[in-house]
Image 1 (cartoon, rainbow, N blue to C red):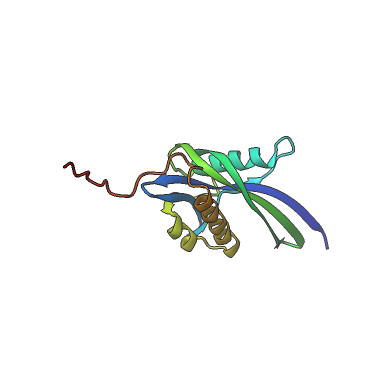
Image 2: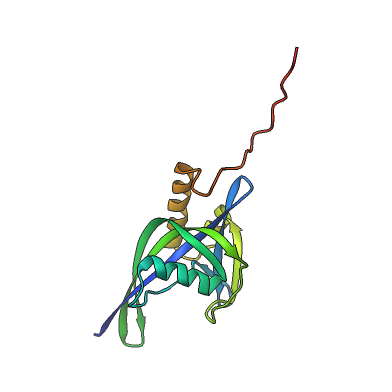
Length: 159
């Protein structure tokens, strides 16, 4: 049996929204399958460059890498060929752009509160990436800039 090896990269694009975070997911097919943007690493680019490019191509949004999350590997078949695909995912900070399905493989692109994003994702391995990102964000609260103040202002009494 013929085995084809594929190498891809992608990102969990996140932005701060009030005291919490939102993640950008892409939707494919009907019924909708929600996943993270990812795609093939070209010969001339690094995994990091491919992740940034793929997120931009599939979502219409620009991001910058904050941390490497993990690599996911899986097997699948196309016809009689067996494929082994490895995808390196990065936590990415949203910089600019408006979600749009610029890629022919993407039907929808939408922001979800990060907990809702985890519940919405189709694949368990991608749900685990959200867990890793959440752990990172809890351990690095300044990774996305100064966290907003959520505590109410306390009035000072003057005597």
